[in-house]
Image (cartoon, rainbow, N blue to C red; front, side, top):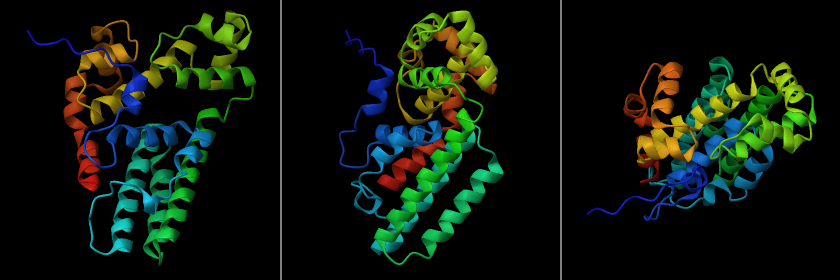
Length: 253
């Protein structure tokens, strides 16, 4: 009798590593998700390792400088796509990617490309931070947003957020809607769906496992809300969006 697969958590998805010696996909996806979330503090932490010293970069050119330029272009393209999916306008995102690709094309050393890489990542993260919290003026709502990002793998309730912020639930509900344009429940669902889409595109975990890892009430509920959001079932969404995963694997292979 086959052994039952252990239930995963959202945090395990982000931090698991592949057996082979290459840039692991899960931390790669965490990096793009962090930029999309506008978490500047965490982006800076993830940029501690210089881009040109990153382990597992595939050989796209025998020339080290040209090889890094190719990888930089792939990275910018993916950052741009992730940020568009997070709400950044296509025109702004693609304008930024074009600008930084031109900068890298003119670079004369791998160290210079690493500097451009860091500048690019932080620039996108700042744009996403402004987009995410542009209307947020209160510390309470900012605290709620941070809590939601850190606890997507759990069932998050208005009462729990009210406890975290030391505010009454009705008052926090009104304040959150006023500053974000979303009800608390709608905002949580939006962020869980964004994460589920990434997991569908970049992992082989089953739809049931992804649903459970993000604390959706049931797999059928997850299927229904994803279809309402995208017009696709989880299976259809996974099939259509595997191109990003393949591109990452090829660039690291």
